[in-house]
Length: 253
Length: 253
Image 1 (cartoon, rainbow over the protein chains, first blue to last red):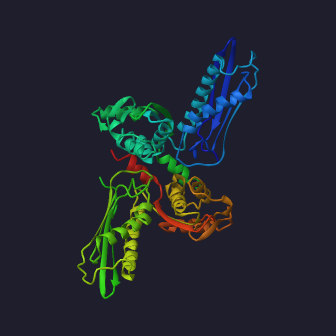
Image 2: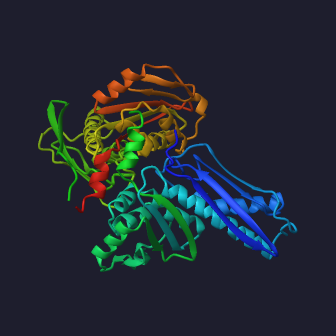
Image 3: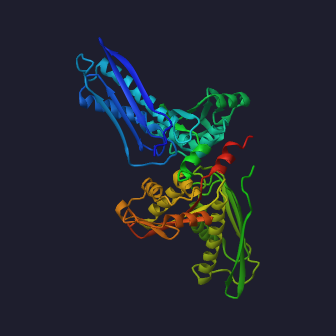
């Protein structure tokens, strides 16, 4: 049984020298996607000419910031795959290691992987909204990732998003529940660009307007600054509503 | 706003020498109870005569296996308290350290604390069933606790219980997602006393009967043997159904 509600299919073109290279990918998966991939498949093909070790390096780096930063329900499994193939059919010279072309191709590949990963989270079981958490000011990268993922994994944050509530309290509680180290008095939080917390204290904002915006949009962006350093990370997840329960409790009936 | 649906109030009597001692406790809390107490209050009073250091030792030991082993939604907060008072009004000599009386009083206090903790989990936000996870055969106590808590914290296990599905797969996946170390090929699982997995493999069982039992009962007991050692732990949690979403998404309306 699949619980995906739609295909995830992306393509883009990148110009390398005088050659237009096409990268195209498809992915599936909508539950048990945590903490690193799990219960998802992605197949990406490019007609670029690139050697296997270089491609492998680009894919590994890309997975870390894309497929490994999504979650649906925090549950996990053992089966996953991201396969990337490049056959050189576009012609042109092979992409050289550490060249401008490699950088450009890598950036395009990363864009495509991020696009597919985000679509997986957006189509999470029962989801009505995509949650995007951008953490900055973390002590180090591990902290930034942990903080961002603690927010996307919190049932209370997920139900607040489903209910279109700009609930900074639940968000702050989720950050505090992460392994990230920071001083609560330095934390700033924005919801859809609106500052709701500064230096660890709530800030007055136009709540009805923000709530309407949350209702109107199918993506809610949280920006968190931990005030503890320079590291950043972005995580994506889905909200938690009635349909998640329906899919995961009533599937036998 | 409180989301408790009923009072949690327990009392019991224990005979120490020629004196009947009464222990009585009340507790509140129904969400954000994780990982150690959090968003809960418990007040326990006894008319026993016991010195503060001894009482403190019994309470600390008791909390570890009771209030620190419950969860509702895996979310956390910073506010909690378990206060235990003993005023000696029952009369009799003070309970001596390491005496039979201390042991008896400690066991009674533990029973009462466990009773209150279980009632908190049973009345978790939107809960229809209590989940009790008994882990045995763990390498050490930390592993036993981690394994038991991974099951009570899994959204997929919780929705399966809400849907009355004897889903050993989700249970095994949650164990694998814990920090506990064990060999999957040694794992045995019982649901309501019925063996559903032995040596890591599913066992044929009467599924309709087990499903009816899960529907009939308001408590579902999972017994897990990890086959990795001698350590044990018990954790309690609540299922995840439509009312949890209602309480945590629609509270503004």
